[in-house]
Length: 282
Image (cartoon, rainbow, N blue to C red; front, side, top):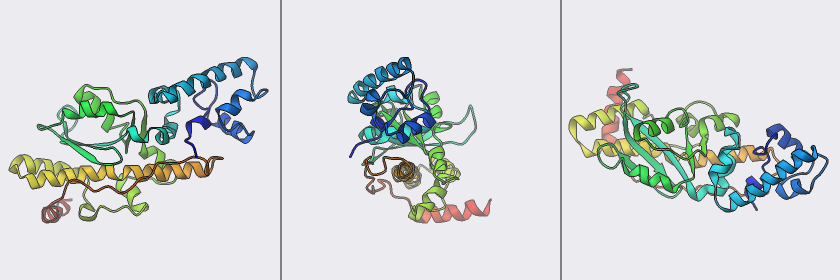
C-alpha cells in the first residue's frame, strides 16, 4: 500500500487534472512510469516534467509539504494528507462576533488526530503561535475564507500553506451545507451539544465575561472542540470517495481516524437553559 503523491502529476508544469487522468488511462500511474514513458508529449516538456519529478522525490523524502502545496491545485491538497497525517492540524476558531474591526478570537481548538488542545483569549492564546509550527498541513471547514485569514491577521503569524478546506472538498463528493449538516449525513453526533451553533458560542463567551463562571467557558470550549473532532472522519470520507473513481482505490492507504474524547465537558443544564432563551428569541 502507498500514498497518493507518487501517483500525482497535476503539480507538474503544463499538466492539469484532466491531462493527469489521461496519463492514468494510458497506464502511466506513477512517477517511475512517467519518467520511462515517451511519446506522450514533446521531448522538451517530458524532460522538464521528469526533472520536477526528481525534485518531487527529494522534497517528499524531506517532508516538504510546502513544495507540493505551492504546485498542486488547491482542490487537490487532500492528496497530501496520507503523507502528512502525523503533521496535520485540524483547527477551528470562535470569535466575539462583533464584526470586522471589533471582532477578535475567543478560542482556538487544535486537533492533531490524537488529542485536542484549546487556546483561550486572555489566558493562553499566544501558545498557539508556537504550537502550530509543528504542523505542515491544515484541515478546516470554511477555514480558507474565515479561520486562517482571521488567525493570521489577528496574531500576525503565517500558517502552513498546505490547507484542505473541507467545505469545498465535501461538496465535490456530494455533501453540501454547513459542518453540522455534513456531520449528520455521516452519522456523526454531538450529544449534549446538538443544536448549538457558532452564534450560541458567541453568547457563551459573553456570558462568561459577565459571570466569570468556568462552567460557561468549559461549555464553549467543548463546542469548539467538537468543531475539530469531526474533521478527520469527514476528510477520510471525502478522500475515499475521490479515490473510488481513480485507479488507486485499492493501492492508496488512508490514515485511520479513531474516535477521540472531547477534553471539555459541557454543562448540560446550562445548555438547556440557554437553548430555551436562544430559540425563543429567534
